[in-house]
Image (tube, rainbow, N blue to C red; front, side):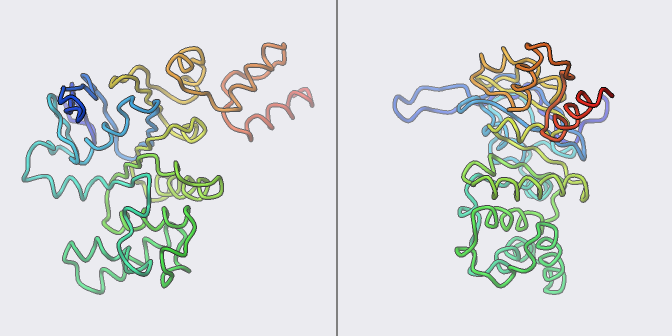
Length: 285
């Protein structure tokens, strides 16, 4: 057998028991997925598609009913590795209030390293570094409940970063935020990936958030139905609509303009790319 990817799911199935009738229901079916170190992967799907269930398998919060999940060569079913797996893969959830436990920002970020039993000097170093990375150093003494939603989520991310994970799995981290908060958090996530080399798995239902990923994975009914670069995935507009997903606004606009014989490249994804292409079109270059 060849060398495994950093995170690897092999024929993963997961079922749970419905409370209302105690019947078993499949949430994941034969999922195969490999994620490399330093990669930025966005996982898309409508509500109930299985994307959050998949996310919770990546650090052992859920264990597969069948199949295997490997993290840095460790099987999540092996209890002796569970602590190491959860230090390797940090989770950030939708509601930052559920991850904030202390009365000041710096105390909250220190909570994880303290539970690792680190000495005070190292904890101080990690807290300062994590707050600097997410741009929250000026709020170290602030009370978390006085922060905006975006700031709270950045503090939650800092708390995970202070544990020094090699991978961040973020389960719809911007779902409860306004546009400003969403931008703050997304900028932070991209900086962690590009500057710190942290592997990122972003679970989202916002198509425009997936545009900046290296790879997009599309889920439906507990299965992976498509995966590939964003420019490839978002050209499959009919499939995405069948799966009850939108396409990024720029992709929709390009499609409409091309239908009117405007000579734009088909793979434009961002507003900046669109502006550049329109300027080039106008100047004839």
